Length: 466
Image 1 (cartoon, rainbow, N blue to C red):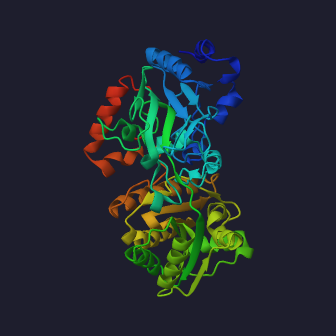
Image 2: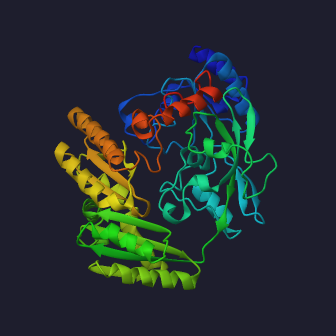
């Protein structure tokens, strides 16, 4: 179907201000944060902005009847090409559908539409002394729908887990326009083991099975206190060993972050006033809960760190905590500034490995950077083995582009070799689909069978996951 006809048909469903087809408009939807979309132009034929389940149904029925690809999209902050149209067709922008439908305080849950921004949701929940724990670094931009589609996690996953642990039920429009509710049609229960777990199937499916139009989330009581321990280590291996000691002491921090030497130097170059100590590694432990438990956990972690660290600080004062946390918070930005003509590449930077192999992973990535002559900045959520790698290149230099492609390929292979995963939180999208068989083996056949059953025409976000 040609673009003009497709636009005309979408205007039968939506008002003209919610159907976009001009060159400038569709160009905006041709990219996310991934390097893939910086080097390839992937334009949709038309963009639509529905704001009701019925509108989504009509769009999907039309697309299904005519075999038109549909790509659901949130805020476009993803880093794997998951929300861009690889084969044209319709981009379904759900970011403006940002209604908080209900806060059920008595049952500690909230019902939202997919376009609600993560930070906005937690600001709203705070008035009820509740919060939604998963905390991606893009909290002020990313949508809840995108978090569910990618099973996002982030800084506090070590204690609070990933998004999937909070999704109690979903409303989903299937490729043919049928609507299903998972987790129980009328359920407000927190526990439900009835039937096949279709909610878990949809969480992390990255839009290849249907369009998520409503989300029922579990909330937690908002912690009353927080504290941070910073520890500086002269030897890289001492950092994961200390994390293990903390776990064995019976303490589960809300977050544990690592900056290796490359990240420390990048931060100090970017913001010299932060003045991080030069070391092989810095750990940041965050603890939260009631004031008494926070004080005990923080002081105990500090004591454990002193066994190996050359410098340890424990703080509960908000200003000092913000100061200690600043080095970690600017790391992603600092990485891009390690060379004046450079740009940070998001091409495979969230691998996940066993905690016992984090130091080995960081050393290996450092070696790969040297092999290809590309500066690499490493940091991550060490508490659950999630390592972020930030290669920095001149994207206008084709030789460097080819080198970084090989570098990130080797990093993905390294993750699997070290008993890990090619992605710990950002998803597969188009960037990592080629590793599916290597990572999952015959299970990929079952994934395809499920996909083909729900989407026999293959219109839902084609080219993603596998």
